[in-house]
Amino acid sequence: MSKIVLARVDSRLIHGQVVTKWLQQSAANEIVVVSDELEQDEFLQSIYLMAAPPGVEVIIKGTDSVKSYWEEATAKSSKILFLVPDLVTLKEMVEAGIVTEGVQVGGLGGGPNRKNVVKNINLSEEDVAILEGLLAKEINVYFQAIPEENPVPIQKLIEKYKSL
Image 1 (tube, helix red, strand yellow):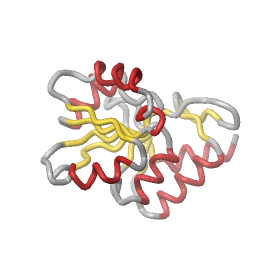
Image 2 (spheres, one colour):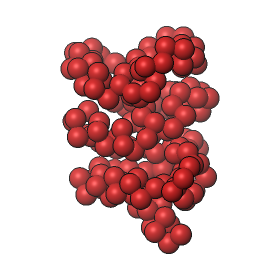
Image 3 (cartoon, rainbow, N blue to C red):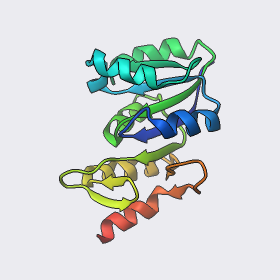
Image 4 (cartoon, rainbow, N blue to C red):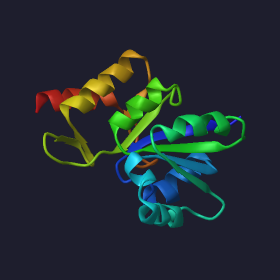
């Protein structure tokens, strides 16, 4: 049976740290990327597929198509690094019953109505509401950019956001 060995929120999706550090740390042999935008863009998909190391299967699905894929995936025996680009997508994956355990937040880009709380984590009011909802469901959510850093409970970043 397939298992998510690491669920990560990272707006950059597959990039150097994911490929060189998190794949090795998690011992994943498959990456599942959930992004409606990426599912529609074959050119970008090809770039992400090339970024993965040999022997690691990359599956790119949108928020709807991943739900049917997930039923098939559980019949396999893969160790999955599950990547979503934002907290809205994560919330949908939790509500679909796909992500049920710990969630690592590794990078959320900046933009309008977003506040920088630490390194490469920028939160909006909607993000904070989603994170608080996940914590209320007793899902362990933490920030960790690289394996060498200690995980930071997401509650600390929510508190910082509210103090800004």
